[in-house]
Amino acid sequence: MKQLAVLIVGAGPTGLMMACELARHNIPFRIIDKKLEPTEGSNATWIQTRTLEIFDILGIADEFLRLGNKCEAINFYANGESITNLTLTEIDSSFPFILMLPQSKTERLLEKTLEKYKIRVERSLELINIEQNNNEVISTVKTQNGKDEIIVSDFVIACDGANSTVREKCKIPFKGEDISEQFMVADARMSTHLPNNEIHVFFDKGKILPEKNTIFSAFPWGGDNYRLSANLYQEVPRQSFTAHEVKTVVAERTYGNYLVESVDWISAFWIRGKILDEMRQSSIFFAGDAAHIHSPAGGQGMNTGLQDAFNLAWKLALVIKGKGKLNLLESYQSERYPIVKNIVTQTDFYTNKFLFGKSFMSDLRKFSSKISKQPKFTKKITMDLTQLNIHYKNSPIIQYSSNPEDTSPKIGERLVNVSIDESKTLYDYLRNSLHNILIFCGNAKSEESLLKIRDLNNKIGKQFPDLIKTLVISLSRLNDVDNLIYDSTGQAHQKYCINEPSIYIIRPDNYICFYSKNIDSSSIDHFLHQYLQ
Image 1 (cartoon, rainbow, N blue to C red):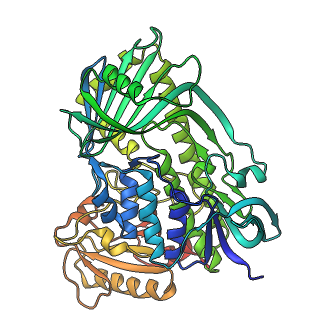
Image 2 (image 1 turned 180 degrees about the horizontal axis):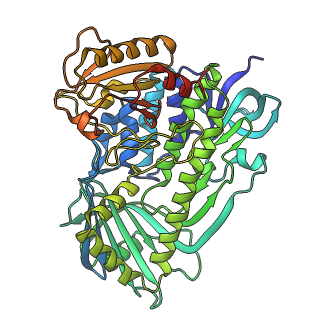
């Protein structure tokens, strides 16, 4: 039996992202799902800005933008009164908005991307057992005809959701707590005078019980289509609700700002906040809901899973190809766990606060005041919300010893996109599966400085021909320089505060892992050999 490189269990957004990335890195794999059909419901609806940047790197952002609805602000209301507008248009990205799109469409677009590699999800295959033996994982799956199939692989990626079979079979505790409050979600058509390119969130004190708060949210999908969400404070949990009840909740909570025309789908849900202590067990990795679930506040869940996959895939690909050392795989836990832990903690904290906090309404007004008066505070809130502020602060594969200027992107942060000319951005040059070394020329004009830059460009490219692409970013047109980016507007140099020649190393997931003003290959060579073969 030929051993497979990777088995992906679960074909939701996280599993599909992992599959797309492994395909892009030319890694053989199979992706299985126990469901016969793809997701039909709307489920997760927020596509955050950072996720759109990832889709841009993959070259598929335009498809999502074509189908989704751009939301450029979040409006907050207290007892029917509009108290603040959190605008997203000033965030530092080519996508200054949140995109609203039903999860079913997100999955279809990712499957469509996967089909370009002539790979399809294998459905009606249910994992029933899994064990690790030395350097292989033995998975037993039940096929549609009831027969068992044994799949032997180097690695398994568990993307099989909150009720993960992989996690259960590995006997890994899923620690956390449930929030007692019941919620109702619905997909509906509504008429309103409120802008349908903005999210609207209504808070009330004592709307149901004097000592508790209520929340109602309307997320626009475009036109008159919306996803609705509301807490209910039911004394006895319920599994179903009527369209009439949805209409009543909307009328009461939105003070007549919305009128429900029809309801397409209604569901009850409860909030659970749980997380794995270790997102890896030897050759099995956990990603997305299989590793962490939390409050849907802020639309972080699906996006966090997509970023888990984007972080892990390139590392796994290098190790499988024999070009990456094992500490690459160790970095998955050290990088992603702190991020995930913070998201679970923060979303659950704020959910409890707005549901049960006695001073929440006054805190909300203070929050509103800070947004209107403190631009730096507003920027931090929006950057956190859209996941642009993710910063890997303690990784074995990032060099933190040298940092750029205070106002430029830092080591461990994402590479910020900038316009190079009227038709291209920096990201356009990075649509590859390699490490990209950016050699900024700065104000270097002497022949000696330019010669160093040319020599470094040539040398590094030859040392790691299959792993690295070098790009020289210059304020002038240089002759005899391969992979030149002519920074005609100077925006790239300005964004990265470049005056003198400098080097950035950008990982395949577009995070900055190295910076230096020393224009020679020795420090680069030493750094890269820490985790590349």
